[in-house]
Length: 245
Length: 305
Image (cartoon, rainbow over all chains, first blue to last red; front, side, top):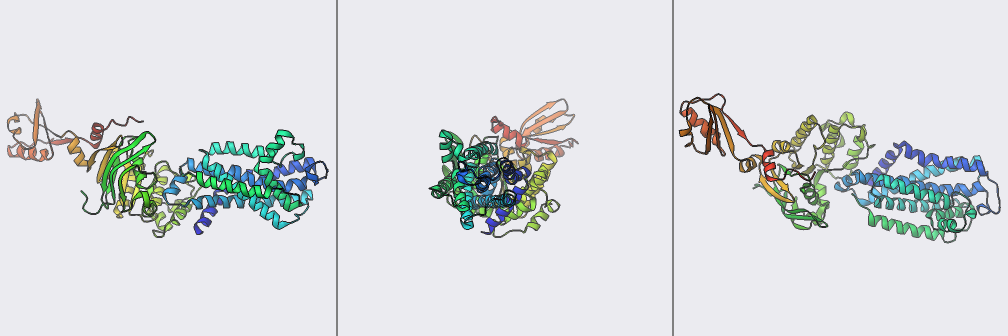
């Protein structure tokens, strides 16, 4: 455990030393918030946003989006890059346990996503008068579940993709598709046919729905189960396919 | 043959990658406290051999023992008591020197402190420098320090000086001797002949996955270097009795220039015979093949790259 703590702290410091990654993880969600908040305000239109104010809809969704950003982009780029450059090989030759390498990545994802999420809430609540969470405990559980799911997907992508460049390309692509179709972009009501169907199968859609469950008491349907199931699938595949070189 | 139990013992090691046979038959023993070299052209199977010893690769055939452990079952025990500088491995660009030593240091139960290692390898004033900002020589020193972090009984150094400029290579050679002087056995993989000739107590030359020669550098030169040539100048005709000197093979003369070829201690016998006959040339010298000549004679000279 001490080793995990040391590795996690070191990974966090390394993360903070990469200005562009920090900017992406912390500033981009705020930028999206400003643009969307400026365009849509926080008015209620029964036909859109599941019948709640648009910012009330978006803020919990963006918290889910933040876990996706870190999990889909930062984490795979970091892991694939470390393998590509021979860092993982060196860890392996020094008997660094697999669970410490993976565990520290998950811890880092958690911490970065938490900071980014808190920043988002701290700005959105006063500026856009977003409603307070209905059930804070459930919001925190939802956040943890979403972060775990995307962290395990991130480790999986980092495990199977050969280089940092490949990880970045695929990560950004997945992130963008999820942003647009997964419920953190246009209101789900305007996504028809194929778009809606694709949106329904993105992990982000279900992360958004469990956040809405806690924050706004909107029905999550099977999303809790799906997030838990996806976590199990991603995590076991990540452990199965993790390679040191 | 080594006097004590060997630190590393390899018998008929074989390793394939699919259809490609990387190592077909490699055998050698490494004695405690020596610098043992594995030489060979690029693609000969050197790195594969070492990675098999470390338990980083699955072994397809043969018997291997490292510090008494079998890498197939006990790679963790091996890694606990060995250190390594791997080919094509690195640290994160933004990791600082002290952070790397601290991290790898926390993987072991005993060994020198971070401060001690920084001091031993001249890195104290670079402790806060990021890996990516170190010079090539400083990175090598850090890798050596990391390889010694667990106070190992054996260190693997794979192509440690590749890519270094000549002066950094000299520094690296001193580092390697320093490691040996602390009592640690060194297994050195290299394709530089001068490096092997200067550093290695004993070595094997590997080509196409098999051992083509083994011994000390001078044994190899004696055995495969095409003998020894002794040269000197003298005005008179002395071929007749030179032929009778022990260890002399052929004598040739070009006006006043003599060339005597022979084997082993020929120089000493020729010198003694010359003095006995009242001949004392001022330019008596021996020309000997280098390890590089041996290497080129025994291998294809690195056709892989």
